[in-house]
Amino acid sequence: MNYIDYIIIVVYLVGFLGIGYFFKENKSSGDYFLGGRSMGWLPLSLSTMATQLSAISFISAPAFVGLKDGGGLQWLTYEFGVPLAMAFLLIAIIPSLYKSGIVSVYEYLEKRFDASSRLLISFVFQVSRSVATGVMVYTMALILQATVGVDFWISILIIGVITLVYSFQGGMKAVIWGDVIQMVILFLGIVICLAYGISELGGFENFLTHVDQERLTAVDFGKWGFNNGDKQDEFGFWPMVIGGFFLYASYYGTDQTQSQRLLSAKGMPTIKKLLLANGLFRFPLTLTYCIMGLVLGTLLLQDAGFQATMDAVYNANIDSLEGKKADLMVPVFIINYLPNGIIGILIVAIMSAAMSSLSSTVNSLSAVTMEDFVKRFKPDMDNKKYVFTSRLLSLFWGLVCLFFAFFAGNIEGTVIEVINKVSSVFYGPILAAFVLAILTKKTHALGANLGIVVGVLFNMYLWLYVPEVFWFWWNAIGCLVTILVAVVFSHIIKRKANKGLEVVYYAGRKELYILLGFFLLIILFSIGLPKFFS
Image 1 (cartoon, rainbow, N blue to C red):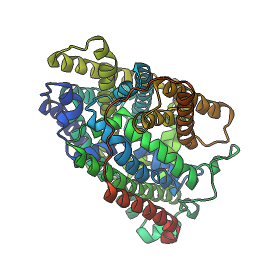
Image 2 (tube, rainbow, N blue to C red; image 1 turned 120 degrees about the vertical axis):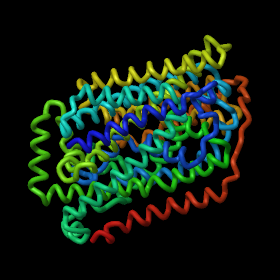
Image 3 (cartoon, rainbow, N blue to C red; image 1 turned 30 degrees about the vertical axis):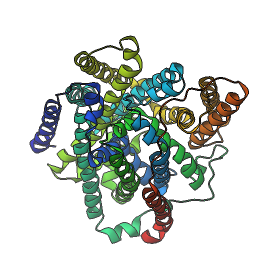
């Protein structure tokens, strides 16, 4: 890196301080947490995808595709459940949540059941999301230290302080428009790495000649995810589609970091376009960085200098990066193969991914704490004090995430996998709670709470005692077990069920057909990929 790269990075960081100042006028909860419900579908779509495409995805997903054992284009199966989940949310779940006018999505559970359901799920969200975000920032700081030479603590402070300042000032509007900029930079970075990687290989034809053919298979109908401990059996078609449907329906519909964007929309027509765009655009984006992973992985195997540099960086930082050698592939390529100026843009892309995830988490955690806990004890708080307290909570949660980032070193070795599993323990039962709240009339609070507890405990039993069941299945199993237990107990134990709020269904037949058609299209496309590359 030289002065050009550093100028690009400084200009980028200063610019984000300006975003917070530009959107500093927030007069109510609707302004600070929902952007005044004035956001259009395009910025919301880009913001949603930016939050999902974290720094871990930009670094680790291409490494999985290009280098890791058992990797390859089967990473694409992560996307198969997305169009189905978007169709389900559009028709059955989101219209009722949006119509209710809530800020915290968990508020709906209290209106339909009682406070215990709301507070329990809200608490789980706050703990798990803050830890996961802290680990993500920690990992990115380690990689920047190993490749760029910026000290670990300086990287965390730069990412954290800039993000906290613009989130603190600007609220949801600053977060969304910041995500839009970061998403554009991130995608630009992926395309640049892909183009330069093909160039270094001597062209696309040479890439096709040398690419590992075993990494080209994306769809395997023979893998069911009941693997007897064999990791190679996990990424099968059925667990990824069925489990993925429940995971993404829960993540986009009931996780505050994502549902808050839906609640920020101008109206249901905007939400329709947002969910449709997310269902259609995620796969091409994932395909692009998967191909980038194949290209860079092929280059690494062909270029002894690339391998030697990566080995040297890893060996020099083995204490902190043990087990993460493959994750160095993208940043080492950036530093050693790209010209100055472009390097600065790509380092900004890595920082963008981290900042996008952190800003979304901070704002969502603040919203949940404010709505689910603070307002419970101070319901008559005026708007000025509400916004001020919300900003303080944003600062608090940002510091909590950075605290976990500083001290994640002792646990981070397996924590990414652990956090994914923890999420899957809860995602299914949480989705079931909203399905019961919106789509059933006779389920009461006791039945719902018992269902949630049993669903979570059953998933934990699978985790501890039935390792043969791939964790993607937990999302489906936990949801179905929760619904079954809740309905049965509500039938056996007679109690009056709260009617809750108005249930709204959206007549999105056209969008439904488009999403279902796209689901079939991406499967057929993925099946044919090996022939394209051969």
